[in-house]
Amino acid sequence: MRILFLAIILWHSVILSAQEKITLLFVGDLMQHDAQIKAARTPQGYDYSDCFKHLKEAISQADLAIGNLEVTLAGKPYRGYPSFSAPDEYLQAIKEAGFDILLTANNHCLDRRKKGLERTILLLDSLDISHAGTYRTPEERAEHYPLLVEIKGLRIAFLNYTYDTNGLEPSAPNVVNYIHKEEIRQDILKARRMHPDVIIACMHWGLEYHLRPNKAERELADWLLAQGVDHIIGSHPHVPQPIEVKKSAHSHHKHAVVYSLGNFISNMSKLHTDGGVMVKLEFKKFPHHSYLNDCNYSLVWTSRPQLSGKKNFEIYPASFISQPISNEEFIPMNTYLKDIRQLYERYNIGVSEYIFE
Image (tube, rainbow, N blue to C red; front, side, top):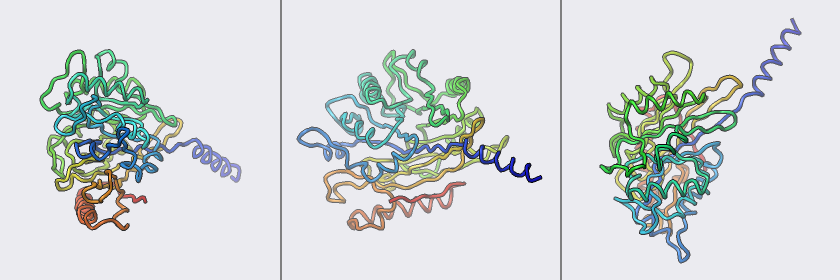
């Protein structure tokens, strides 16, 4: 009996030693309005290092950090809304902040037409940043999509789609991934043939400035899960929307559905657009299976020079509300945190907030 007990203990220790913990961090819209470009201007070019300095450690600690690149990198002239083209230094700062994957299928990816789409991909490749959503040719899409990434033995297939491109059509042979169910269905089947542990669909969808997902979002999320997607990450509304961890009807697996991450950084000041949410998915990987172990979130808020008196825009973690910041910053930041926490307390399912300094 004692030998059996020791064997069981040994077996459990082998299993525990064989498991890996993998953390994925998702953030919302990485935007560049005119005021941001002006604030980053220096005699030598553009400097965005201050923008991410308070979050760099948190971003870099994740095994994979993923964001929605809602600008093009089309070169000069640099402009913000409504036709975005950010300085190349912006992408370099995003890379240095610790981001590994950027999503490019959104309603602004054709703002500078063919040049904007193709030059953005060229710069992403030059900095060795993985990406999904737009492609220079159908052949490039066929070779690189779905985006398959392996980290600590966990194989993850990323999908990315947008509802529209502001009425613009891609110039041949460029390709943009639109939300077309039959195409998505085929992409999911292709992803399955890659034998991933996890399939994650990143959807640019929903209604701007709405704090709740609409019926179409919910129905599409349910459809994606039914087709074999494991987790869903949403963007576009520019405000956070609820997060739900759903239990599978057919297994013990859990599915995270994040309807909107809001803005990670922008110059938007409309109520609730001045902040966003970072969502962390923690997976456990064993030799023959994996599962979502935990899902939690942290709120962030963008400090603007006109409020802080500083030269540049800076993203603050929620913990900064208890630090000595100006009253001009405290009031809107406190409003944002209070309102989104109330929203999440009422509608979130199966997630909790984490705070970092």
